[in-house]
Image (cartoon, rainbow, N blue to C red; front, side):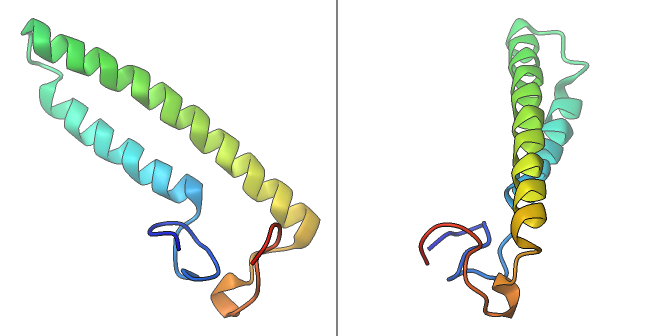
Length: 90
């Protein structure tokens, strides 16, 4: 069973890109809190967060691509209505 993502056992879950976008928003919120802190530790954490944001944004684009591919090939997900997975084993 998945905890966050849509699956046959969690039909009310989120798309991967939705979870990643929420994480990105949280990182931006936290980064904004330390943006004016000039201490070296804060600078390093901010730099790390900026790198993580780039990677998360790239992951969002990849996840969106997968969703578009599945939607085009198999139509919208029907898991919310009791439908099975569009690909893979149930």
